[in-house]
Length: 155
Image 1 (cartoon, rainbow, N blue to C red):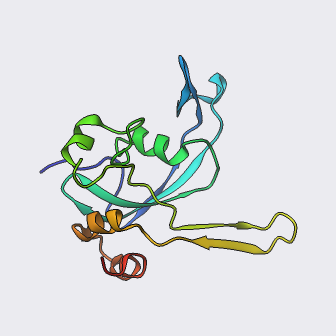
Image 2: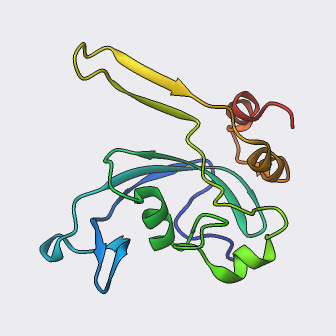
């Protein structure tokens, strides 16, 4: 068979704990860096929602707020974000250039406790059409059909 991804099991999820810090020699780029070398603890919860050949639709819930955390964690797991010129794979970005002319990363929902009241604050933004188009080409993971229908709707 083909290996389309690394580290993302169908119909499940996993917790990724990799410290992140500034890459040595490139102050603009972040990377996985041991804590003893300046990396700060970072945690992401990752769940596979759908797939097609070399593409996956993932839900990522960062539990810490490091710079470029999602991008760095997925790249470190050999599953970089499509269209990401900094942390992605050039050959995959070229292959899907007609479908992805930007990083295919979207914050569907952001939530946090209000700093003064402690009340939950939730912001939602519809999934953009370019991501919907890619997602509708994919096969949903078992048990994810309803969630995908809720967030993607129609194109």
